[in-house]
Length: 261
Image (cartoon, rainbow, N blue to C red):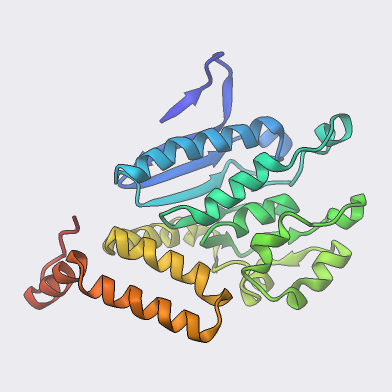
C-alpha cells in the first residue's frame, strides 16, 4: 500500500496486500525494531490502511512480521530516557490487533523482548522459529511488564510465566508454545508454509463466521457459564439461520467450494 512517508523519508513499517492477506512488516533493523515513537506511529498508520481493506472485504487476514535480526526489542530506551512516557499509542496498537474483525497472525523469526512479546501476544495466532528465545526484561531496568501483561495473560496462566516475569531470564520457543504464548513453534524453513496454510484456512471460511469465531474465543472465557450458554445459543441460532450457513451446507451437499457473499 505504501512505502514512503509524506516527507519522502523511508518508512520503518511496510504494508502490502496480496490474496486477501495484509502483511505489516516492521522494518527498523538498526534498532532491532524497537518500539520507538516513529515505529508505533507507523504501525498505527498501517492499521488504519489495513482496516479500510477489512471494511471493504479486500483483507481477510493480517500478518505482522519483521525484518531480521530481531522481531522486536521492546521499548526504545533511548527515547524513554529523554522524554515523558506516553504509552497510549502502543496500547491502541495492541487493542486493535486483539479486536480486529479478521484474524491476526504474528510471524516471529528473531528474538522478541519485553514489549515485543506483548505485540506478538496481541495477535490471534503466533508462528515462531523454534530456535529463537524470548525474555520479559522489564524488571532488569526497574519497571514492570505492565501493559503487555494484558494480552500475555489472556493467552496463558500467569503462574506458568511467573519466573520469566520476575527474573527476566530468557525462555525458549518450545516453552512458549507449551504455555500457550505461541500457537506454532516450527523449524525455520517451515515458517512460511505454516503461515500460508493458516491464511488458506482462514480464507476458506465465511468472513462473518470467522469474525464471530474470533469474538467467541475472546469473550466466552470471561463469561459465567449460564450467560455464556445463553449468548452462544443465540449466536448459533442466528448463524444457522443466515445466508452463509445456507451456502455452506449447500456447497457441502453438492461437493463444491462455497461462494461466500
